[in-house]
Length: 246
Image (tube, rainbow, N blue to C red):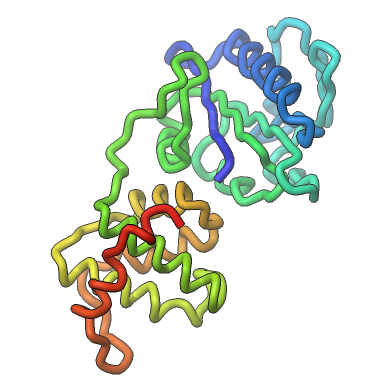
């Protein structure tokens, strides 16, 4: 998962918040030669002026901007296109909400996502799931989205199965995910969609694979097994330190 950083000094965004995130983006790019682009991402073209007005040193139009010698594109959810080169882009999302962020979150060209919310409540959930850190303090946004050691090992075991079989979002992998959930359920481990999604992303799974795992792990009752799996044996196989960080 790419790094995510947010900045919001007060209850509502200000031009200073945007200036600070732009300066951070320029400095970050200098340290990572593979990053070629810094782009802005806003909800609509119509709100560009109201968002960017008052930002010192910034010049902008409908489709592009320049700031302190750096230029880039301005995208909306409708116009955004991945750069094509893996992890080559810093995307700065301004005044966006959870849904707008989801539309670009799986872009392979994103090396780091920088976010200036209009108000924290608009995208706090997305920032929590993506382990966003505060630009000023460097601390992760507070949340309670953690999983037990066994749930983390189930994710590691599923990662290993996907390497040998298919992406976890593929229909053929559903029996593995269901068996993993059954192991947790039979051992009294409760999980939530949010916590599993966050942990899957932290473990390096794609957004589509993370979503698939989290959805099946969000069940409230055990799944009907295929065949007669030995869940006691499966627990011994899964509950192993080798699945902690593979």
